Structure formats: C-alpha cells, structure tokens
Image (cartoon, rainbow, N blue to C red; front, side, top):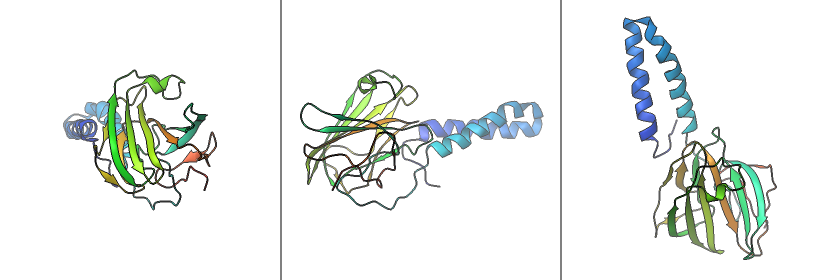
Length: 203
C-alpha cells in the first residue's frame, strides 16, 4: 500500500514504539498492555495515510479532496466557493483540480477550530493559486482541530497536470475551491467527492 509523502514524523515513532513493545512482550507478557493499543494505533495511521493511485476523472474542474461537500457559497466577486469536509477516514492527499502552473503557495497562521465550524476558514491554512485555462483558480487547505499540519508538495512556479498530488492535510480537515465567475457547481451539499475523480463544475 502506498503511503502519503510527509507522514514520517508521525508514523515512524509509532511504528518504532510498536516494535519495541512487541519485543518486550516476549520477555514479559505485561508489555502486551502497551503493545496491543500501539499496534492498533499503527494500523489506524497506516489507513489514515494511505495514498491510492487514481484513474483521473473527466471535467474542467475536479475535486481536490476526498470528503463531503459541506457548503456551496456565492462570493462577492462572482466566484462560487465549494467547501469539502475531510473526515479522519478519508484519504488525506489533495490533488490539483485543473492543469496549470502554481503561481502562489501561501501559509497563513490561524486557529484550530473543528473543520465543520462556520468560522474554520480562519484556521491555519495554505492558500494556493493556479494559473489555468479558466484563469486564476484559488484553493485553500484548512487545518482543523486534529489536523495541525499541512504539507504542500509543490512551490511557486511548479507545473501540474489535473489530478496530480499537491499536498497533504494530516488527519483530515477541509478544502475550499473557488469556481470562477460564470461556472456553476455540479455537486450538491452532502454529496461525496473523490479527489481527482469527481467533477465539480457544470459543463
């Protein structure tokens, strides 16, 4: 199973602790009290940090995240924001919604409210801008109460193809994408999305 880039600081200490307590259990079975929950934690983290290959979908704008559409909001400048909530059970790797060039990757400090909170757009976040065939596309990775680290895989000037892996939010949170003026969303609130597969714009 392929694992996401950027998980080593979280995963390796857990794996090491699991291995150490498993060895100690051979000498003293009381160590099983620690080995069993650590083994379960390791298994859970391997699941959380999976990074499956995908057959990229068709459409002008594809979902950047696995999750559920939390809200669809018209923006004052004519764009439409589609917010996708990522639970801890979703794949945490985010993908490029369109092909183009990365023109900006900006880290913004903030809080750690639960991602379903209406004020979570003030949380710790990374703001992306892509120059695409549809013009400038903005995407925002938002950390939540549990997810306290966003790991971008790319920097300014990088070229991306639609569906390329672009970054990781550890343990789930929220991803917002802003559809340009004149482009309406194809998805609805409550609909499940798959990164790099689900089309989110109307043709």
